[in-house]
Length: 198
Image: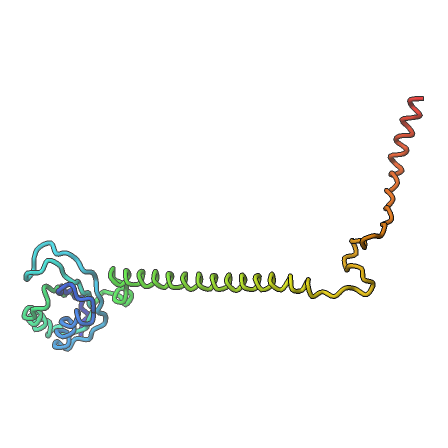
């Protein structure tokens, strides 16, 4: 068995790739071919009308088949109305990386899936941040509501004086606090000026 590469043009417009690629699977199964890879290449406008169609779905496939069955495969493809065109080439030189590489359509699907995943992750992150902010606001509101109640419920101290040590009770005279003495260096500077002026 040899490896072949096939490009099939199918009717466009079917969103379900499994259903759209059924004609390719059918003809390959009838030829007893082993499908290595079957993926959409792209959906494009045709340069000219083929079997009354202006657009086509390009399907890229790699398969192994007996070279003797290739002519029967070509004949089967021509008889299938669902296949607009097909090109089959020998692909013995093609590596596994090429066979399983992304096509433009699968790359676009991967980008779209990644963008949707990023959008979902961003929405989840924003929802989590909003929930955290709501919890923080609720905790602050609860703390503010509890603060006035705590001040009203505060019992007086044993001496009857307010708890704040910086306040003096009403009706008492507070002793004045003396000013600090000037620094000695400043005195010597003043005295030396006085001595020079004399």
